[in-house]
Structure formats: C-alpha cells, structure tokens
Length: 113
Image 1 (cartoon, one colour):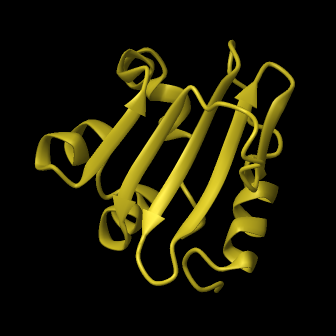
Image 2 (cartoon, rainbow, N blue to C red):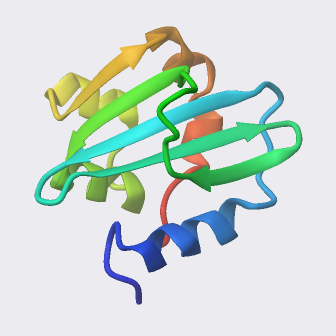
C-alpha cells in the first residue's frame, strides 16, 4: 500500500479516477498543509478525470486547504467536505457553491485506501 500523499499514492489515485467523469468541468486544487506541503489538482469533466501538479498559471474552481488528518479522513471516506467545513478542518477558496453543486462528483474523488 502506498504511503498517503506520496507520489505513488497520487499515481494510484490518478489511475483509479481515470475513467471517472463529471457532467461539467471542475478543477479542484488540494493543498495539504504539513511538512512537506502537498499540492495536487483534480481536473474532472465529461472527458474524464486527471490528477496533476498545479502549474501556477491556471485557476482552480475550488482550492481546498486541509491539514494531514483532514485530508486523510476525506480520502478514506471517513468525512466529507461539508463535515470538514463544519468542523473547521477544511478551508475553501473559490466557488463554495461548487462543493454543494458537485458533492457527488467530489465524493467520487476519494483516494486509494
């Protein structure tokens, strides 16, 4: 089993999500604060889903800021974004409405367990 947030874990996540689609395009940047900080982007839409490194020149619809424990809970399915927001473990920049509008699609983006 890959170490959480390692390159191998992100690769496994990308492989698992490759066939996942979303009716509309949604780009989510995930920032897991810690040492080291981990950043990755999930680009999902009708053509499929891709995990990639942030390029710095494209804007995400949403940026999720989590600590490692919140990220672990989200990836494992032990908590959803709404629960983490309510608990104060998740901060969001961007269109907060997108979390509600795309809750099913975001739920499908859980990481490998």
